View 1 (spheres, rainbow, N blue to C red):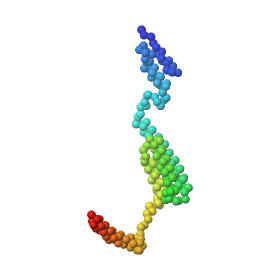
View 2: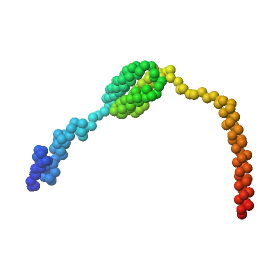
View 3: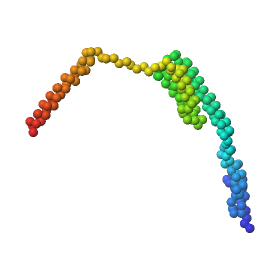
View 4: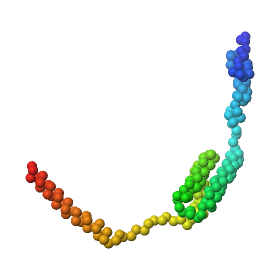
Length: 177
């Protein structure tokens, strides 16, 4: 009959081996249970639709709460500005901070961006702060008549001169050959 060997891991308890020289499966599982942290456990939780819905609702509520914190910080900053909300140079930093906050929260909760809650916040900020802003486009008018005449006559007079120059140079090059 073969003798049983005793094996030990570095700094760990000794494990009796079977007659073939390998530790028993039960002892290995027990050892894994002791060594692994609970989140690294080999056993997987059975997920049901109810548990997934409850977890989804918790994530949704936590995300909504964090989005509201982003919104409140943005709104407080915007309220401190003296109604000059249409100047992009002033608004760009808080607006970018709001967008960054919404994106980072979506990423930390494993959600995509944009998502319905972030869209609601963005639409709300546009309705509240930028409703009276319009695209300011310059209105173009005709230039004064003297400038207009100079811009029209200059190319008209230049064309006959250039044609004469080309014809004269081509006759000169034919005479040399």
